[in-house]
Length: 170
Image 1 (tube, rainbow, N blue to C red):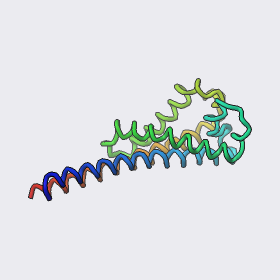
Image 2: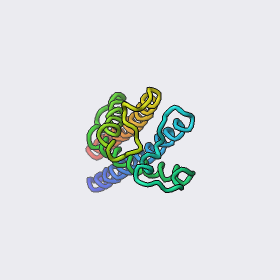
Image 3: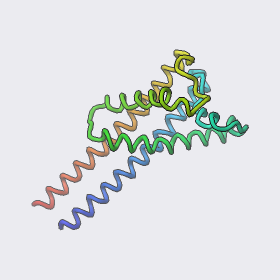
Image 4: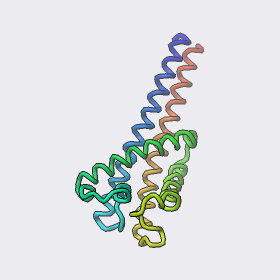
C-alpha cells in the first residue's frame, strides 16, 4: 500500500470516527430523554424532560405526542455537542469511570449552571429524592454510553491506524 493510499485510508477512518461521534451523540440524547419521559410517566421523576420546551413556550402541543417527539429531537441535537466535547477532552481515557463521572458532571451542569435558562426545571432543593436519584442515574447511563462508545471507537481508530502504518512500513 502506498503512502498516499495509507493517508487516504486514515482520513476515511478519521471521518468515520467523527460520524460515529455524531451518531453516538444523537442516539444517546434521544434514548436518555426517552428514559426521562418514561421515568416521568411512571412517576419516578416529578418533572419531565419536556421542561426544555415548556420553559420557553406554553403551547398546547407540547403536552401531546408532538411535544414528546420534539423533546427527543432537541435533546438528541444538544447531545451531539456533548458527545463532541467528550471526544475532544476524554477520548483517550479507557476507564469506564470517565463516562460515569462525565454523566454526573452533565447532570450537575444542568441543574446548577443551566437551571436559570429552564424555569420549569425544579431546583435541586425542591426535587424529591426519587427525582434526584432517577435523573442522576439516567445521566450516568448516558455518560457511560457516550464515554464508552467514543473511547472504544477511538481505540479502534488507533488500532487500525497502527495496522495501516505497519503494512506500509513492511
